[in-house]
Length: 81
Image (tube, rainbow, N blue to C red; front, top):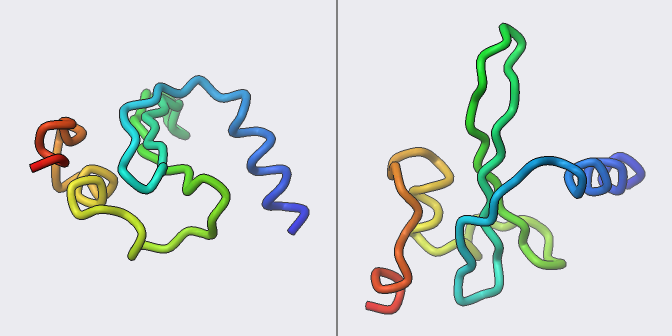
């Protein structure tokens, strides 16, 4: 539990960009980090807004983006359709 609190606190200070929000209130982020060999890599994350992580609560379009089977985040028009 303490590790979860520390993890959330450190994430609050990271350089991350919000790329979208789904109908359930989940917020999706893109973070640029340095890898062990010094390369800049993109990390994709979701904040479940007070809920424990559950893949069942992530819409398919966002799940594809998080798993990198989709390059760009879904557009609002796609989600509404």
